[in-house]
Length: 113
Image 1 (cartoon, one colour):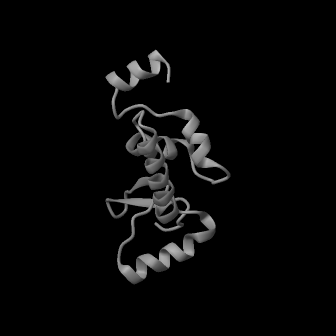
Image 2 (tube, rainbow, N blue to C red; image 1 turned 135 degrees about the horizontal axis):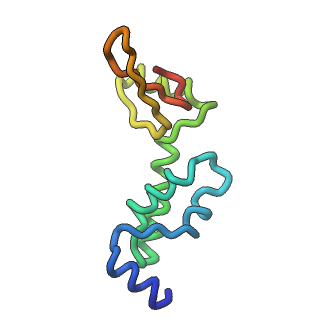
């Protein structure tokens, strides 16, 4: 790690995202880069190599459990029905239904409204 990297980690502790880790974690997964960067910023924003490796495993586990792939949407919907709740990582859009005067959320990959 060069002097600039050390200084950045010192002054912006907990806010640094290493782009090289994004490529390492993403592999062939169909996960948006901004999701990976957010999670890596949460769990790998350090210069300690052991903490980074632990953080990478945590990020992979979070993605495995909570990221919704379109082909697994039925399984996730079933889990929600059985358990009553389940944390998901998905793209959500919200629109105002003027007839009912209520907001409606749509989960892109999950396919529910």
